[in-house]
Image (tube, rainbow, N blue to C red; front, side, top):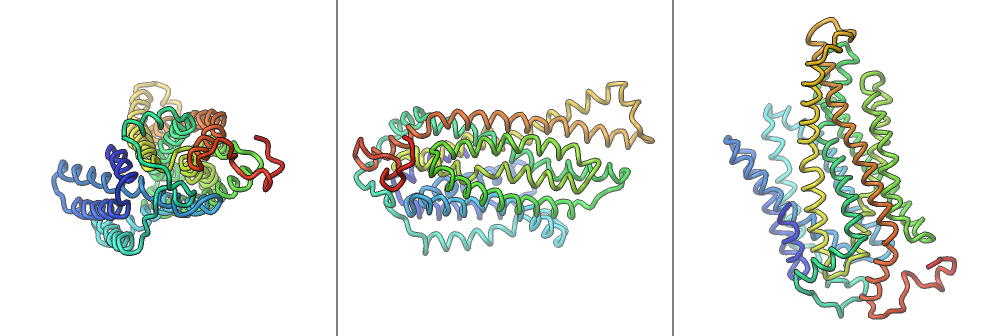
Length: 412
């Protein structure tokens, strides 16, 4: 994702359609090639190249949507676009698991998606329209500035910086859950059954289904709350994001405790926790688009993508694993394990492994609270930053966020 700012810079100045076409093609090609690698380092190289392809469309696609639509319609289209995150993640568990089982090789899980990627390449190249920057907002008079000027302006944009910090916390939690969630729940269910093994594919299917459903509900609910609440309260967007994280934290905490005692409660809390977590995906994208000038949006998207992945989901699975190992070592060297109601060494070890991973996953709850704080700070600056963009786009110092005649009850 280090290439995301580069794609963002190019996307603010050159044909976004061609850049996305090349990026998606590279993503498809490297995904397929990686499945044939027998050497670890070659496999790692091709998996790294996948990120370059991802960076292209993840950075540029939201800005194309912003130039095609404005207002509430833009918010709805962004929500539709961001459905791909939870739906794609959930389908990844289901399709990948089923394909690998059917073909008796995990490599085939990587050979399914390139087919869809090539279809996307054809659609982007032949069907996609590449509008002028800011076309939907009538900002044709704005011209692209130098990369240095773009970075300076973005760095001074407090709404962008704090919302990016909050979104990084979201990515941290999402990455940790997607990597460790299925394994953790499986370990809990096996402890419920007295150590009997649970079918991995069934558990992955259930986790994937919950992820898809929670994503659909969360994105829809987040968009609905945003469009209705910000009509009367301009700071609603970051507050919705912040409250979603604060509410998600205890729900996911409860899920970790219910895993060994009540399967229904565990899945229910997991679903509700992910719904609250998913409230913000489309809203954060919308915030970026209305607090950053049209000619700098792709660059801003690139940096937000870079920071959220580099400091979020790229490292969270590893950190959770390191913490879990540390807790395991500590528990196994402690004499307190002798008090557990276990009958065999294997059962004791399984319980310790579960508790260690549970303690490590508590980190995500603290990170969610931190993310909520960042979004709360964003709320203090968002109205001012949005007005600055409105004034720059329309070339006036008098234009407000909305027409006062249409919304007479708003307080500015």
